[in-house]
Amino acid sequence: MTCRHDTHHGGDGLVGGSDIVLNPVTSGGGVAIGQSTITSGFKLEVAGSIRCSAVTETSDRRAKENITYLNSSESLCKILNLKPCSFVFKKGGTTNVGLIADEAATVIPSAVNGTADAVDSEGNPQYQGIDYSSVFTVLLSAVQELSKKLDQANERIKTLESSVK
Image 1: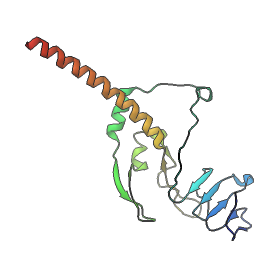
Image 2: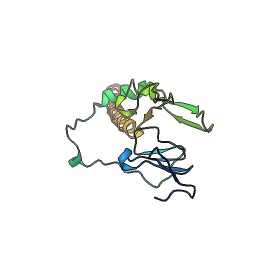
Image 3: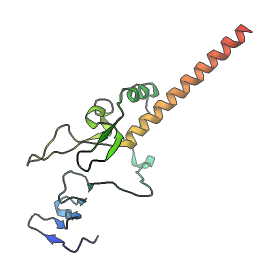
């Protein structure tokens, strides 16, 4: 990866310019884009929007163990307890829709990264994040539950209609 022309190598082990910071493998191997420091334990941290044609997550059965299928009734309860909202990011002022990680953590803890109200050693906030693909999986299970309920309701309606004739 090529850094901007004002690339520097400081005593902190970070290599980068004002747009890209590379953290050498010996220091954890992270990359930050759009900010001057790496503030999380992730391998890639971007301050701003990302555009790409696709994101692919490893999902091959061979890479997994202890597979347990979700209970669709429980998934529906979880989705109904999430609180979708709109908001404005303090930094940048952009309006968006989504979930608040602190709240979602009480409903689908596995979808939330980080710890509520965490700060680094210098007092800088360590923001929580949401893995929306995990939320999507629970949502998919909830839709399956709604489909079952709809099929049952339609069958009851059909039975009632035939008894009225």
